[in-house]
Length: 150
Image (cartoon, rainbow, N blue to C red):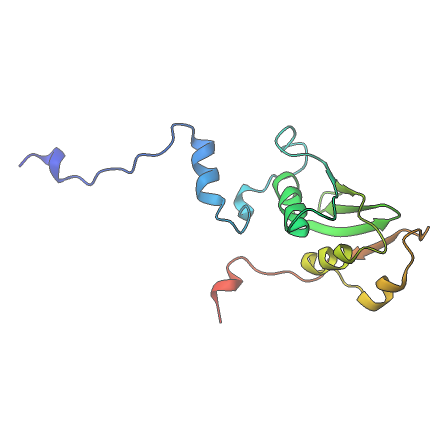
């Protein structure tokens, strides 16, 4: 037997290294933190900076979070205004969700999924045309791999 037949074969993957990483990273749970861009400028052209909110879209909160995660760094704050919501990352870059504002139940679901510190009962009482913008810090943080531990 020759040495070549005894060596383990290398797995064959896509020719483009970037697409190989994307296939490995996108497991349905979103993009892993290693694939997150350092800032919005690094992701320019690959991801939109604005999301047009449609309340009839299925699983809209998850889609908003995936879109934000692909183009921006870790979310740090959320600013809610009349008719729009901005998710600000740790660099201060804003991902804007047009059409999602006060009076929408999906706003509460989005804030909860982001880990915002807020009172859901108080937010539900605000009218849709509330003129005062409010900003919420994101305090809940999950360590990478926390879902694998007991």
